[in-house]
Amino acid sequence: MPALLEVQDALRRQFLEGENPDVISFIEGGALSPHARLNIYHNTFVGTLTTALRLNFPAVYALVGSGYFEYVASAFIKRSPPTSAYLNDYGRDFPAFLESEETARGVPYLPDMARLEWAVSQAFHAPDADSLDLQRLASVAQEDQEHVVFALQPNVGLVASRYPIDVIWQAVLAKDDEAMAGIDLESGGVKLRVERRHDQVEVTRCGLDEWRFASGLVGKRCFGELASDLNPETATALLSDYLVRGRITAFTLAQHQYSERLP
Image (cartoon, rainbow, N blue to C red):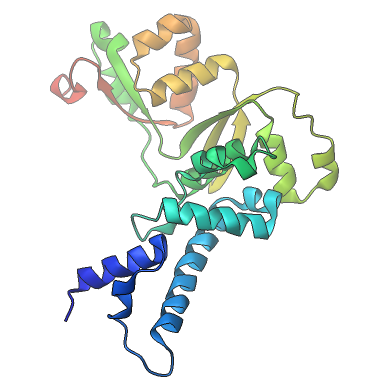
C-alpha cells in the first residue's frame, strides 16, 4: 500500500503537470472509472483556486471577462500552486504573472490593477495590531532618535502605477460605464496608500513627500535617512501624522534593539 505522501505527490503531479500514469494505480474502480474520478478532483481543485483568484481580483475579473480570466487562472495555477490552505493569501504572484503574459498586454494597466487589488485584499485581511505606545518612543535618548526604524501597520500598503488605476478600479467595481469611458490613460500615474480603517479599505493618493516617507518605512530606513532625503520639518510632520493616525506599530534602533536601551 502506498504511503499517503506518495499518493498526494502523485495527485499533485497529475493536476499540475498533466497525465501521470502512477496515479491511476492508486485509484479504485467502481461506478466511475479512475479517469472520471480524477477529472472530478481536478475540476474541483482548479475551480476552487480560480474562485479564490476571482474573489481576490474582482476588478481584473470584470475587466477581462470570465472566459479569459479562467484561461489565465488555469495557467497561473499550474505555475504557482498554493503553498497553504489559507486561500485569502493565494495570488501574491498573480500581478507579476499577468505582466509576463503576452495575451494580457492589450490591457496595459492590468498588472497594476492586480497589484492594487492584492494590496486591498491584504489590507482587508491583515491582523489587527496595536498602535505604537508613544511613551516608549519618548524614552529614546536624543542621540538615538535619528537611528529609529519604524514599522507600519500590517493593514497599510503602497501601490504605484503610471496609470490612474484607482479611478479605473472604482469605476469597474461600480459598473460605471460612463466613468470608464471618461478615463484618460495618459492623464498621469498615481502613488496610492491602501489602508484598512474601521473595517473598510481606503485607497488614497499620496503626494511625493508622503510616498517617499512611507516607502522608506517599508524599506526599513531609519528616521535620520528619511529626514535627510525629505527635510527634517517634512519628515517630522509626516511622522507625527502617521503616529496620530495609528499607522505605526513599533520601532527598533538601527544600531541595536530599543529594548536594550529602554526600561
